[in-house]
Length: 517
Ligand code: KIV
Ligand code: ZN
Image 1 (cartoon, rainbow, N blue to C red):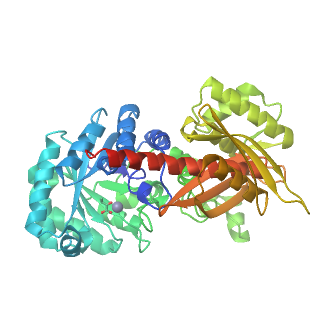
Image 2: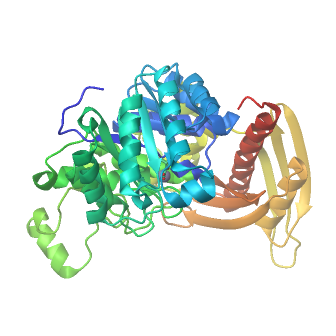
């Protein structure tokens, strides 16, 4: 990777660290879609997954390695030979790839989790790095829980890793315990005291348990780190990771302080944030820095007055610079297929002609009901059309009856490939009846954890989007569905969640049958 000392490498872990968080699991095709958008965003490295952990993870890393152009593709591995081997096999078709191996260096992890002495941990790490170097020259080593480690052991470990061939050394604040000045000091200490450290890149990987992940990462940069590991919308284990958009925009907006740059195409930030939010099922909080709905909204009289006189009075960066256009493009019944297609491309959807045609038919239906069709409506319609949304079950037909004095009932026809599954059921209300009919047809009745419905853009004739969370064997799966009919939107969301659940179950089953993973 060509770089100079002013470049901060952006290592995105949305598909690995964030994907591990409860409810965030994506299908293999959804991961590919996110990876393609991360490439458009210009991240330097995509951590695509943890290949040894399941066949689904292996397949996703392999697919991304084969199909995503531009970034280096990385795969995670413990300091265990079979992990390194699986990572190499999953990654080796990428033009540029990295093995990211990790072990813990804090006493609490070594004693209670690894149950190994420090010298055993160090020996295994060195062996793993040497093995990884036989597959690729690009090897990263992470000292998990570095910020709670003895500094003398950490120095020893970092030095041994460099001597073994690691080219990037990551200093994770795994439990989000560090504060900016102590984290910065740790990076500065390693830079000063570890021989050979100037030959490698020091990386940050900060969790957000105290809300300090971005600040800690930036403090790392000030003290010599040149890679930030981060995720879109700050998603990740527990309170999440450093947020990509915050780190990148801080570096860009305060170049006077940091004196460094990233390769991120910042105008792609908002679109990436929205895509990840939709697919992972985590709404972006309204006041989230950079990408929240209110991040660029001005309400109070004094602020609005200042903005009207000169935007720089209350704006340190423009919404346009992160891809929030402000202009809400409105299409209507007479917009025409060509205008619709151009808008799809502008909104970041790469659909083939058949998919555009199907989406256009849905757009016309919507435009008939709703005079003005907004970008958000189109995004929701297009989302349904994306090939990555297709799963085992597909809703073909739904009929519901409900009203005062009647027992709500529903009939559904669901397709599983060519097979037709048709059932009827009643329930406490029309959504409950539809869910009972779907459960009878599919033979699956996961626990419904959460259900919500919202109008995508206002008005009673608006497009509705339902989000459903189901629980199965302790894991949460999210599904989304959209329609102008709220019962249909709800049914689609439920089926989408079931499809996510089945995709994971299929991966686990394969794993159990295949000891080599
Ligand atoms: O938080 C952490 O320590 C990690 C490592 C695997 C890098 O995610
Ligand atoms: Zn982490």
